[in-house]
Length: 203
Image (cartoon, rainbow, N blue to C red; front, side, top):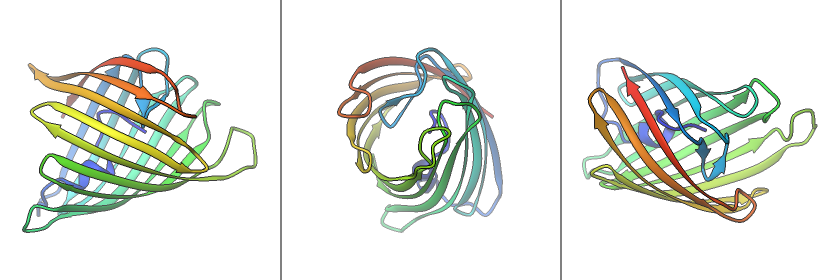
């Protein structure tokens, strides 16, 4: 559940390389959302590290949430066909250090061509902290990106329900990546609109 990170979807869209590549990132967002769900009501700092070689990728990313940290671990493999179609398969686990939430474990599938990309994830939630309950969910999101402008429409299913739309624009200012976005959530997820600003740097 992260912003400014290498996700299973974006990893699938990377071109393959025979050389191993390490990268890192740091960032801050004024209001942290993930798939339409608000994670903080104030600024959240984050940092991550990624490894990619020949289509394989793995990494970890952490961010501040309302109580403690969210720590993500992910890995997968992506290919790009001669016709420009990119396909990816990966797994992600989201762990929490405080009482904000428990844990989520997902399988991630992705496809993309040109300005459009599609993500489908199936996962299991460990339930509220301290509760012995498990819920299944899936998520599907369609994204568009061109010249810094982006738009995503996402929907949750199974034991979760809700939809959201996110619009954004990002650009580089000196050595930093800056952006602004608007999240509009509905149903059981958030049911509100939020404007956020972000700044980050990759190494």
